[in-house]
Amino acid sequence: MFTKTLVAILGLALIVGAVPPKKATCSKGRKASDQRCCVWFDVLDDIQENLFDGGECGEEVHESLRLTFHDAISFSPKMFREGKFGGGGADGSIMAFAEVETHFDASVGLDEIVGEQKPFALAHKVSFGDFIQFAGAVGVSNCVGGPHLQFLAGRSNHSQVSPDGLIPLPTDSVDTILARFADAGFSASEVVDLLASHTVAAQDHIDPDIHGSPFDSTPSEFDAQFFVETLLKGVAFPGNGSHSGEVLSPYPGELRLQSDALLARDPRTACEWQSFISNHDLMVQRFTKAMAKMAVLGNDPRTLYDCSEVIPVPKPAASKVAHLPAGKTLKDIEHACKATPFPTIKADPGPETSIPVVPAS
Ligand code: HEM
Ligand SMILES: *[C@@H]1O[C@H](CO)[C@@H](O)[C@H](O)[C@H]1NC(C)=O
Ligand SMILES: *[C@@H]1O[C@H](CO)[C@@H](O)[C@H](O)[C@H]1NC(C)=O
Image (tube, rainbow, N blue to C red; front, top):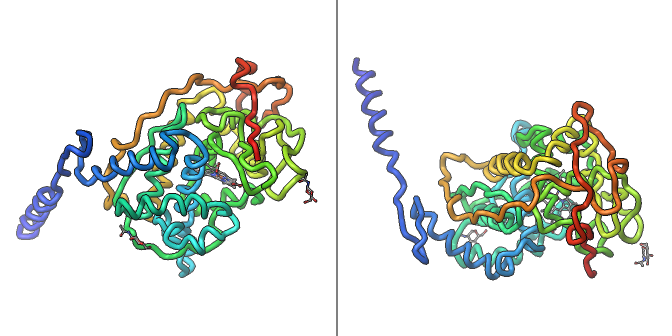
């Protein structure tokens, strides 16, 4: 009887303890369901103007999106089980310990965006871990057809330097990549879901001679072109010969990562890969879900609070189905999903989307 009463009292205390967040009107009259989210409207204005060139889906956005991954994926339950420190996940350690972590092989080039982002995080007094995930979510919302990612705030600003070797490399085998992601809690399909990010991506460091060469023909659009173009027969190297982590690409000016080429064709991942080609909504939905999981790695989500309302809603995609780039036919596709026929897609709809971007070096 006594215990029952105690349980009831404790239960009541818990309910009373869960005070609903305080609503607030933030700068420029914008409403937040939780006053702690107000600061993010100010960060939003600042980075859209001063980091993302007025709300573009350009280089800084691409790098910011990549950074969300390289901060978060350094999280290994396997290492913890072995009694070692397995990294803190999405904890901002790549910014707090940039001098160590941006020198990891897998993170070559990220010192630049970390250096650009850090003053914004300091100026607005937000944690590095929160800032990195926020900048990625805002950034990708600038891409046409992009996702409206969840943004939870409240990560601790304290972190430890991550161990090296936890971030996948383009030279890794599919076995190695899938094992690393499985350790962090992701299925083979979720690896593919996360790789939708490579639709708004380019490389600088695989072949430095062709700085800025994209992974698909539309690097400013969050479309499914990446998933089609990686399945085209490789015909040539876009730059000066072949480099480690690179395989033959279908197009001048477009670079294909070895890891993307292998994942597109592996029986464990090929069907998820192909499924996005004619289904933009599915791609965005799966990416959004997998990103929400990645953004809180190493954190207890119950200690975080939802500020997703600050993230802008992206412009809708012009087309929900990808197309074959100019000069290519279905014969050039290396169909890899045994379970499902290759989807019916049209040839390139017009010159404005047909040119692969060949950037000036
Ligand atoms: C198998 C896993 C992955 C591998 C091996 C990989 C590898 C790479 C490599 C080598 C680059 C080029 C970097 C450079 O030369 O500048 C790159 C770029 C990029 N990656 Fe990944 N990546 C993987 C997964 C992811 C994930 C999960 C995300 C985000 C959710 C992501 C986002 C990006 C973005 C946005 C870029 C473009 C950066 C820019 O344009 O500056 N990648 N990736
Ligand atoms: C976060 O930690 C860094 C040191 O790693 C420090 O410079 C910065 O001021 C801290 N930010 C906040 C909001 O406490
Ligand atoms: C291509 O790469 C080779 C080997 O690294 C180098 O010797 C040569 O100068 C490069 N050519 C150009 C045009 O950059």
